[in-house]
Length: 323
Image (cartoon, rainbow, N blue to C red; front, side, top):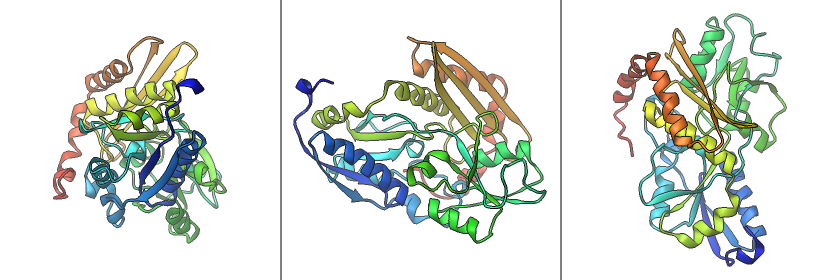
């Protein structure tokens, strides 16, 4: 966008969760908007997911648990935009909302974090690994079924504190969150996608706005990164086609190549006994949604349906309706 076509400066209010990482992300976007001449403030909004830190994700079973209250504020025009970790957003948005921008993605990998051990492979038999993600647990069980996988909720600092207290020997966290907060002192390994395929949208931010708010959408356009947009649309389309959420052991990761994009998908049984993988490539000019749908179809052809159906009873037992 040239300076001549830059939108006029506006007063904008960002909605954000109150965690340290969420506020880092909101301030990161606020700084970029201020550099364009906009006046920006941040409103902290407590979400359902924040209020239920004592429960495992699989028990909550509620899509949008980190976004529902923020979207309510957006609809009521109490805020003008929301900054999300993309993997928190449901794959389908209400018609009232749109993703105005996907900023350039950070490292999408999962990180092995430990004080006393240099690698995941070096953990002794029976060691405790903290992670609240079924996706991570299921894929790690394929590599090390001899370890104990412990439910771990809380923000980055809380999890690092629990690690320091010796509650577990290691934890698995998103690399991007550790880097954004400057908390990489115990990051030992960035686990490759063939060990843990990342969650759809991991490492990416999404800037959400009201679909009819053309002025705000125009003001946010400069933040959008075309390669990131392609990758995350493909990932989210695959996840939507598989019917997955945070309580389902699914990993989807798309990345740019010199002549196009590759996408990897993993569907695992919760116990790690069965893991299905599919990988596809595409050329520049192909549609990201079509790539994601094709990947999902390949996984279903391999037998993903029965594996995914294993998660349904756990979701129904929570008694929490999806927002």
